Image (cartoon, rainbow, N blue to C red; front, side, top):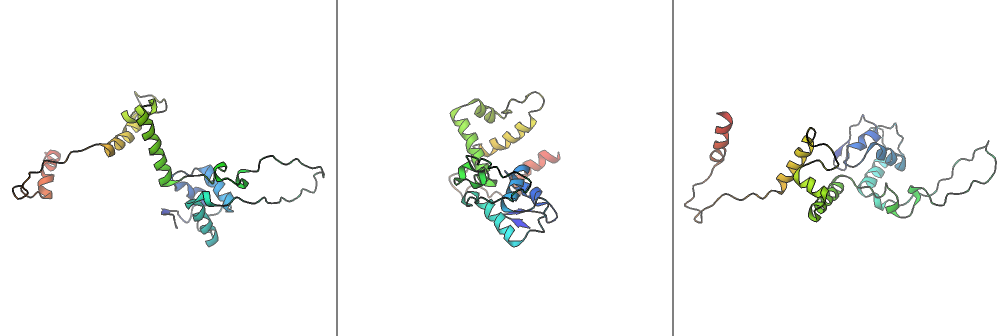
Length: 196
């Protein structure tokens, strides 16, 4: 099944399949399943159309989902009839503001990536230590650099490659005087270097 552009295998549990979305951890997936009323042992194949609709609506715009009402709990027969003091603040799912509920302020996929890149660009722009470490391709959070910085170098190398400023090859003013470049002419030096 495809949900918001991501493929969720039919045989997987819903709480496991939700972790394919960037930004949803195992614990967050469990909370989302509880919020929309999906059993934790339910598979993707066993979801009803209403549950799929609720899930896609929740993941596409979690801030627009209204707060849940208080659900009455079953009274315990063995418990004494003494009044239990009510909590001063309601649980997160019943709070009116979306910003106070962690599940209604969740960001996934492109929004989360965009925010992370904006944060990195902000640190680079103001010149913090973290920003300089990102710019130089070193680990940011205190890891060692002699032996295990290969992942940070690889990731930051790709990031730097996107931000590099490449100059266009020289083109003569007279287009008629320039020979037409074909693909084979462009790739010939590369082929010679690779196969010699």
